[in-house]
Length: 219
Image (cartoon, rainbow, N blue to C red; front, side, top):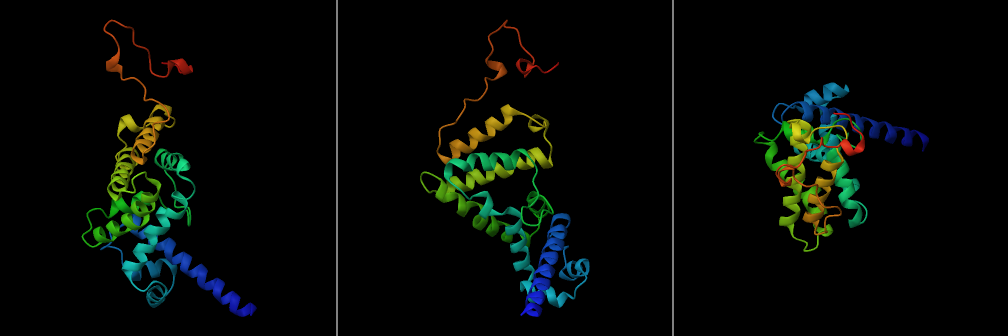
């Protein structure tokens, strides 16, 4: 029995290392460029073991995406916790929670123009993001869940990939609040806090203040 347990443990460790190597490969190369033999070489095992462990490249990719996104963790808990979870995920880059190897967004961005990966990513988004979101919404509408998912991915790309200046900043309470409000409205909740007034709303002739000066920031 101890010998059998040791073999099982070694098998699980090898499987984990294959997944870790696959995540790195799919995050750095397109689906077409990533070969199972390269993943096997990264781990130091025969490619036949990769086939036996996952069945195919498509199944390995699907498992990699699922582990990276971690829908069981992201969408766990009550509906009133969802806004905070999603907002926190957008505000700070985060490693996958299972293996802590890459930011899940890297896999999506790297493979957005991959002809073979696009249908697999579409299936993954439906399975791992849209479907778990639907029960959290008022009207259980897949369209609403898909729109929210598209909005979250778009904000993440603007903030962490393109690094669009208005969405940058290590700490930005206003941005965090605006994102939370977008999520609340999409879910069907009332925004918790009204958004800050636009500078254009200021009356003509009124003196403008440096944003955040009330918090003691220096200009």
